[in-house]
Image (cartoon, rainbow, N blue to C red; front, side, top):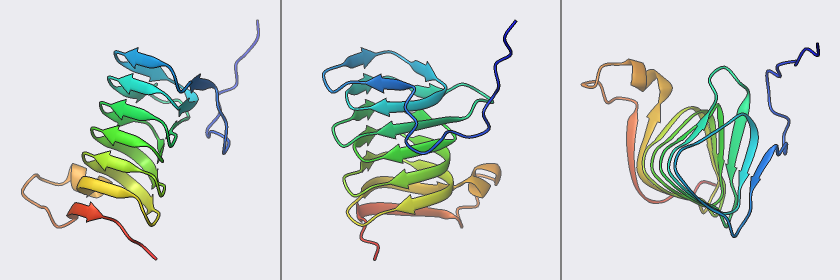
Length: 142
């Protein structure tokens, strides 16, 4: 009876699901829309295919597992790989894993222990590592 309109984007700051600071989730978490993590997720965080989605790991948030979403915003801790069309790493971001992206924004103070892998590299052969940039230090971008 009612037709649900699919949004092509998630509005900045939109929160459809909140994982509070005292919440611990064990297992894979599938979502659409805006997901805001202040607590802890032990497992994969995966956006529904074809849906507009953004996952935000807040300063107090921890994800132990991979994150897959069109938009990934990190200001907390990620132990695992991130896959996103657009990835933002804010000053308190601590990532121990690889970041796969099309567009990335890294703000001074964010830390990545892993590799930056541009989306074109994913499609290229494993032998071609021209666009893979190993990072093993604090990122300081002015």
